[in-house]
Length: 328
Image 1 (cartoon, rainbow, N blue to C red):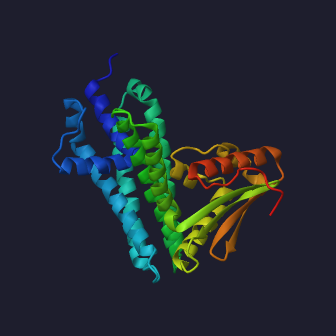
Image 2: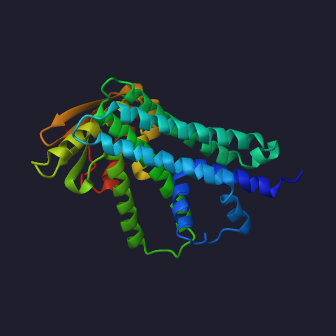
């Protein structure tokens, strides 16, 4: 039996919004400019203007805007307004719920053969939906407190925004594949610039105002970040908030932050996840920043930690040797 092409395109468009949600926002702006989407077939062009797609795009745009508004309020020096925070998070949940309803309705219209043809895309979509739901759930937990922790709300809002940004970069990356190839040196510079932008959003501080160092020890290693200016208390506090959050996430086997920054799963992460009970992550304050001390007595876990830290050294170009030192 032949699969209905129109139905397949319709389902594909809806799924692309869920697999690459920020791409919908980019397309929304593109359409507002009055330009035509190059390389898009007339059939696909018609589909992206369908009511379902327009509705999905609107909710995705709203999701991003409320997350940004919440983040911007949370980073202010004054206490976060609990009424505002709860209302913003309620809107995030509402948008996700509506998107889920649209998705379920479209899945019900798909034949078994169509589902089979789109299996890989559906798996990506399911993973993406789960990550978005988890991030919003974390914010819901944050704002239930009588006095929400502004730093925690900011960190979780940043994580949600960074996830959306990462998905957008993935979509843009596909489009770049069709462009004229650039010189290796130009691509390397562009990749570093994009990674730094993602890093600033995920970590919550400016890479130009801070310095990273990663060191390897016989029992693990350390991730250290300091403000370049001894008087820059804002960067110092942002560093401490991020590293404290990272230590907790890593201990729970959550490496979403470095995956977002580097747009890939860093080497060593799969093993560090599976052996999380064998690795300890301890946050410590420094005078101008902080550090996360990583220790383990498991040889397999230790090798994975070394792999992870050496990848960070190379990708962030920290200038550290990557050699195992005798100790602190």
